[in-house]
Image 1: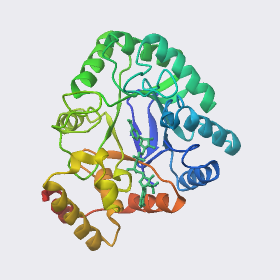
Image 2 (image 1 turned 90 degrees about the vertical axis):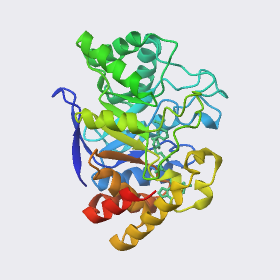
Image 3 (image 1 turned 30 degrees about the vertical axis):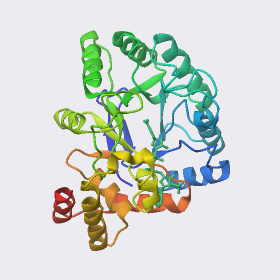
Image 4 (image 1 turned 180 degrees about the vertical axis):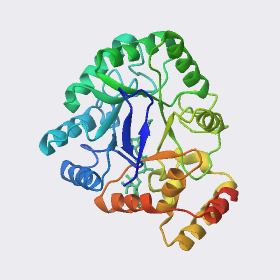
Amino acid sequence: MKYRTMGTDPKTRREVSVLSLGTMHFGTATDEATSFAILDRYAAAGGTFIDTADNYAYWTGTQGGESEELLGRWRRSRGVGDEILIATKLGARPLAPGTTFIDNPEGLSARVIRESAQRSRDRLGMPRLDLLYAHVDDPAVPMAETVEAFAELVAEGTVGLLGVSNHWAWQVERARNLAAAAGVPGYEVLQYQYSYLRPRTDLPGERSPDGMQGMLGGDLLSYLRAEPQLTAVAYSPLLRGGYVRQDKLDAAEFAEFDHPGTPARLAALREVAKDADATVNQVVLAWLIGADVPVIPLIGASSVAQLNESLTAVDLELSADQRARLGAAG
Ligand SMILES: NC(=O)c1ccc[n+]([C@@H]2O[C@H](COP(=O)([O-])OP(=O)(O)OC[C@H]3O[C@@H](n4cnc5c(N)ncnc54)[C@H](OP(=O)(O)O)[C@@H]3O)[C@@H](O)[C@H]2O)c1
């Protein structure tokens, strides 16, 4: 495994593995025994960066919490302590079973931040959340209220690092400015959907007519380049299996990849994979980890075999020529 540091403050910064493990389906679609086996394998391979959220898996008809609860049981049964960072998120938990984060989200008020963080600590069995993200933006709450509420949790020691997901670039910058002006910690970890295939950015999103806030595009990439002390985490880096299953890539949820650049990029990926004696999934992960704006891929896995394939990518170094070929395509 390889490691890198997230955060700047010596009191909260953490070294984590360059590959993060998502647990969105753990405890629901992925049963407990399989989830524990994947977690055990990840930890044995030196993985130290696990991701969850307070709303996983609300789509099963609940308000979520199943993933955090499973992680709490795994931590207790394995005696896991501070050596493994578990990141969680709040703000997108539906306020009632059967509703979603689009029509009925808990949002980012000071009260929600305090109460939901407490619930996550209880479910995970952790007195301190190592990394807490704002899961989606909340235009109904003044940003200063959100920034202050997160900072209070850091000040009282119940949260370490702060992160942000699925916000427009201007919102991230504004929130960080508000925090800096108030002399309190701001968001230092940015979690967005990002992979090798280029998404169209002109399609309306589920939560905005202006586009998809969850996509890491040029605005955020240039921001990360200008602020190298920030950490980028990429969710769905393997497009949920779409690189090896055309039917998944063709599904309506990936409409942003339905454009003429995609076949060229897929062809380059296959060519470099052959050249590097690796799988296409491994090339995608290596491409992200070793990029000039380095990214931590946040992978999902529904079996130990899938995780093993991703773990191998950590040691795959793409040559300058391979990177150039990948970069030029599409
Ligand atoms: N911040 C956010 O809004 C947000 C949104 C989405 C996800 N996330 C986080 O990101 C994590 C990962 O998201 P994701 O599941 O979309 O990531 P992903 O790594 O792109 O997709 C994981 C899925 O891809 C397939 N897969 C993985 N390895 C494979 C392999 N070697 N060969 C073939 N198929 C493979 C599996 O599908 P099958 O099970 O069908 O085989 C697996 O469930 C989540 O668990 C969550 O923690 C965050």
